Image (cartoon, rainbow, N blue to C red; front, side, top):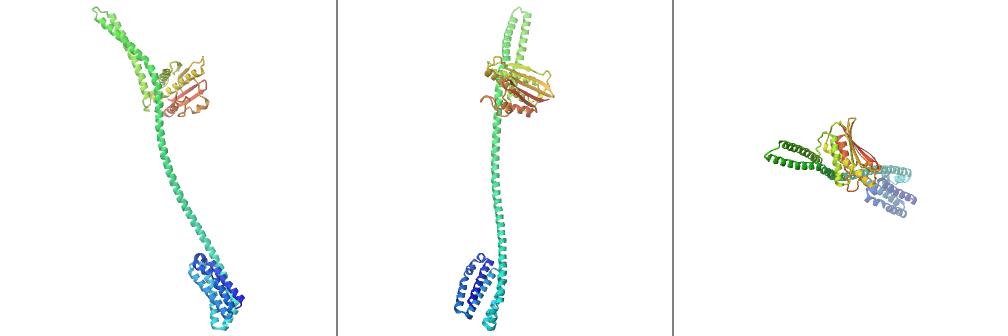
Length: 457
């Protein structure tokens, strides 16, 4: 065999090994075997050098042995990778060439004429090598297809793993968020309970503040009937003593006795009248101070307005003896009774009257107008199946910037320490929510303020 043919066959053998490794992916699937396949160039070089040195039949025999060993190695690799589909095509590619090489080896060993025939059959050997190359490309293509499918499966598995990981993460975050929301809910519930408790305390404080205003007015109001009771009781005592002296005389005067008895009876009646008046005032104070039962009764708003107007006025005068104001009343002569909780409406009226007197007192002290006469008026009317109570003052008025906030809880126009900011808010709730009515306000700064209570009949 010529050196050029030996070199060509050597390179072809190395090419078969190279492309076989690529087609079968031996670096990944058979890494131990692949280390030997990578070194295939070493025996190929030795075979080539030996062929050059020895030449002739020995060189051809060495070529056949080299190819036989290469084909045997390929068959072993194919068998190890028989479950891998490209290995089938590699086996189909190498099988005809292996048969050809086996027959050529047998011919060389047994029949010289047949050997020459095989040596001259270059076309058949070329076709077989072409066949090997084509099927190697087929195997290589299948390897790429399987690799792509494996990559897609791997990506799908990674994506599925990522989705599962994200699901676990989301589930963990949802659980954490749910736990956080539960804690926030508990905290809000606790805060709400504290706010409700604080609100109840503030409402009670506002009631106690209004009770203080009421008590001051009642103390002044109750003083008059108590003075009458004391005075008539003293006079009655003197009359009783005179009557006893007259009856002890030897000569009695019937006319004097009758006159003394008449005066005594009249005093007792006046004592009873003023005693009932004092009891009525105390009863009103007790009704105002006790917690509202929510029970509605038929209520005379004219009497309720008159009573709380005087109580609010005297309550302010108990704090400031120098304060005086004109009280104007205009009560509708025929006013229907209203089903209402009288204690609650009394608190509303007391709050409105107290605010009115506070406003006129402030204007009197601040403005220092010589012609100014503090005036608070209340009138009642019946219109459109509604009973209306209008409380009006000529005080400082409410600035336009704060009129929208006047019924908001804790909002007050009074200086710090003089108001809780709950009076009008509670009054609004009592009238609107408690009685289904309306509480309206109109004011002009520097002129005065008007509050209107509307209650359905």
